[in-house]
Length: 432
Image (cartoon, rainbow, N blue to C red; front, side, top):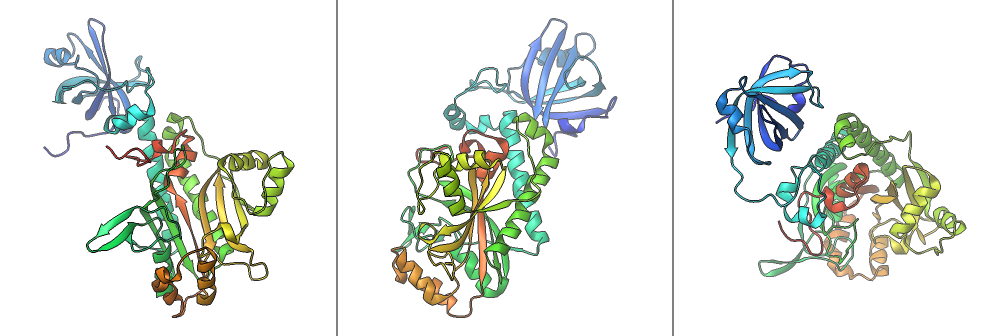
């Protein structure tokens, strides 16, 4: 069978008079007597196939009345100009049904009749054919590729860490248990401890893209229970250096996606503004800003989603850092500020009113690490393997993690994070 097409739709521009073979789905079908029109859709776009009685072979003309979403292959000549919206069409010489429709399509893919998100997710394999859904995942793919590209350029090494762990990596209790032979194990909520061990092991600069699992009973448009994290960890570095790297990576992700995904951004009715720099604001200054603008918040409270949006509106910045967090509301591995141990060298990256990344300088001093583990109400015995590594010569180091679905959501201006996960897993959804 080999390849059933010679070109994708996006490659047809400038090919006037050339013969091509296309394959995809029948997006729309119209019969107006002596003319039959089929809009053929592939992952790159839509093109009109125009069959005229007497010009197209009789077998082709008769065939071109198949139901929408039929899988088809068409060979024909590219004709530029004409009345089609795209400014080109295909005059067919051959047409073939590769797989007929044998059941009802659950919703209208053209968007003329809106479909509820749960109906679409229940039939995700069909929903993925929508141009808007295709655009979201093309954008998401470019974001992930740009992440890898920039960190590789900065001499980071890609690694993989376990998804099955013996204890909580962030001290939380919201874990999915796994029966691991005769032992109790958990799905990893973060690669945190293991990427640190890689740095302590001398790899110095590492990154990874991996699924993580959070057994939190959320019912919000910004949370999932299985998410994709894009992590980086670097040795001989503090939080300021980690933010410098994060800023470079984040801006590169925006720049590459803006350049590579112009059509997709237009499809989802979004745009990308690439800041010249990302301003760093302290936690306390933002609490003060909120209080001055009618939002009651105390030092030591975490920001709510509403507060995050409000900060973005008040600052008027697409993206900004929040630094100098209270130690008690960050993870046990965050390094306290030497002169002010009630604060720690932690930071969050906010984008379009939503936290998409968090990071810290890590606590690399074993005696202080044990102290912080106890301070956060965790049993040090569960982390003996981790703390012991710091007793064998751990350099100062720092790192961060971007949530890929959240970043894609904000870039695409999607209303629900589930739009940005291929087959999302939330509190209620386990299939498809």
